[in-house]
Length: 170
Image (cartoon, rainbow, N blue to C red; front, side):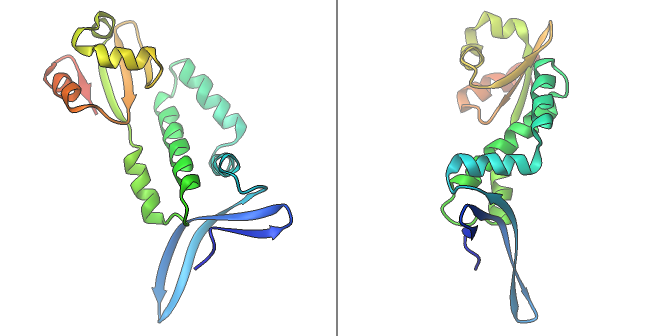
């Protein structure tokens, strides 16, 4: 079994993740991904995992496009990947490929579209409006609608949203 982190030189390490154990003709084979890190701290690991997938220019473009209400779905995927990178970095042991697939499901976003007037009015949508005002949810809006991406919805709030014909949940 490979180590989670192993030194390459005095100031360079390999961080192992995405482990897959394969039994082949009586032999055990380990497939995994590696990133090079300069220190073993959490922030360095998260940064390098993200850098492995997104360049600084790509990150900047995603953020700017999101702020301009362009390619919002790509921004949501980027944010999901950031959350996964944090989960991988927090793990004490090597994360397996199946654990990463579970992380993907855990960080999947729920997309809710509703008239902007319902958020502005508060009322039964008070909790959702509060999340938006406190920036605890990713959202975008048009002149008529708000689209919100959430990691979870409380059962009481979900029940209210589901019976509203002007609300769509994906």
